[in-house]
Structures are given as structure tokens and as C-alpha cells.
Length: 130
Ligand code: ZN
Image 1 (cartoon, rainbow, N blue to C red):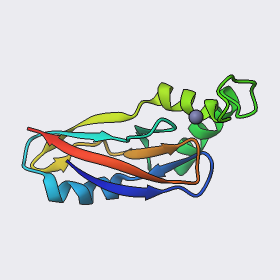
Image 2 (image 1 turned 135 degrees about the vertical axis):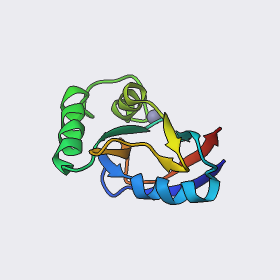
Image 3 (image 1 turned 90 degrees about the vertical axis):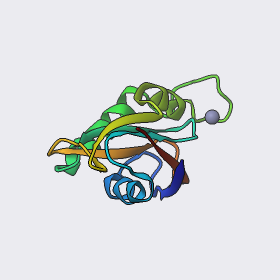
Image 4 (image 1 turned 180 degrees about the horizontal axis):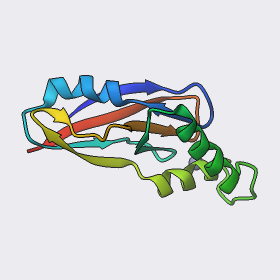
């Protein structure tokens, strides 16, 4: 298992980490199997979606913010329950197929770290299952 850092610059933001993941993969990959990605956080998430048009990720982010507003009267005293809920909905890990040591993503797919309580520096852990 290796890890790398991702810095967010906004409170909520979808960051395309496909290249970071591909670089990390060169250090751990061994042919065919699966890549496991995980974030050890409770207010950010990982997802795969369209990376060709950045408006797609922007729309998802904006809609989640509308669906789960920061200002809602939640009980959690830290004031970031919206971030916890968004992370719970999207999920904190991914399992992706590998072939010849490379990710088998679709033409339009990219891997995103979904920041819901930034700006922060986040950790992404990566390992392979062969
Ligand atoms: Zn909290």
C-alpha cells in the first residue's frame, strides 16, 4: 500500500486525480488485477465519472451542495455535517480493474477526489489486489 497527497482549494470541489493514480500505480502495479483506492477521511470521497467535460463534475458538486446545504440545522457541533453526509453518499473507496499494469477506465472516465470540507490536504491510499 502506498499513499499520495491531494490539496483542495475550495470548500467543496471535485479534483481529477487520474494522473496521480496512474503515477502511483507505476510503483505498485504488477499486471492484471484490481487497484484499490481509499481515503482515510470522513468528509471527502472518491468517485469515477466523466473527466472530459469539467462541467459534469462541477454540476455534480453544485447539485450535491443544493441537495445537502451547509447551513441546514444539523446536530453535529463541528458544523460540517453536510460534508459527512456527502462523503457517506459517494463513498470513500474504489475498486478498479487493471490490465497489463494499467487502469481500465472508459474513454470519458476519470477518478475524482471529492472534497466536501476543504480546503485541506488529503491522503489517498492505493494498493493492488492481484
Ligand atoms: Zn465533523
